[in-house]
Image (tube, rainbow, N blue to C red; front, side, top):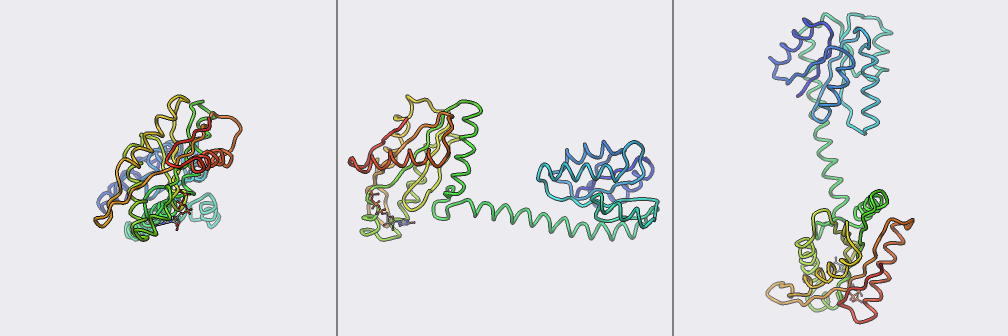
Length: 305
Ligand SMILES: Nc1nc2c(ncn2[C@@H]2O[C@H](COP(=O)(O)OP(=O)(O)OP(=O)(O)O)[C@@H](O)[C@H]2O)c(=O)[nH]1
């Protein structure tokens, strides 16, 4: 557990540090309110607890914690517990401390026994918080991943598309948004079973990933449909890039349980150049191009600039 000790009195700070280091905690220090804010911001990723003196010149502990809580909220950071340390045992001060964003309030001189017990309680909270952050990460990943192919699902793909469109509007580099739809996929399922169909979807996702440039994005939009975003693309490159994708998919059959499954895809592409268009209309243009590819024979790329 990593602890930030804030105290303007050197001896108090060093005694606390000595005690906590002996108990096995990692300690960082600050000797005034502003330094506490700076240290907090610098270490917020792995800090577990702040022990904050209240009476300090210039900026007192309450003010420092208020500023820390505000910065934390602005940057959507996790809550890190704060214990105030004060010589004042006034009830109003305890209340002010909690209102300022503290989680506990200890009265100086602090008994080592009480401090050790409080540290143990804070350790439990820190462990719980860490587990929560981990599970949130896993949940977030599950909520944004297609479970069959492991690529982004439609929701996550659309979020990334929106972000890429914002970047295009800001920096002017164009993006291509494409929809891939496997041809006659119903036949694949009918002939090779649902497992065969699933194996094709996984293989196709892997083939796309194998030639995806860094920074480009793949998602499964649903069924046998994938979305691709190619960033920083020039108008004259579009056809060659997507012909390459088409050929990596139809170059050789997918092998499932010893049987070969031939596969082709139709691709509709639309270019986004930073105009007022939104993601729905961009996807619609790609979808219209895809419809044209399907209607005019499949296994081809149709591009709408
Ligand atoms: N195996 C498998 N099949 C799926 C999955 N999701 C959708 N499908 C199937 O994909 C097929 C899509 O068929 P259609 O929309 O008729 O299109 P298609 O046969 O690919 O024909 P075209 O798109 O016109 O070339 C349906 O049979 C769906 O059941 C999936 O996760 N796994």
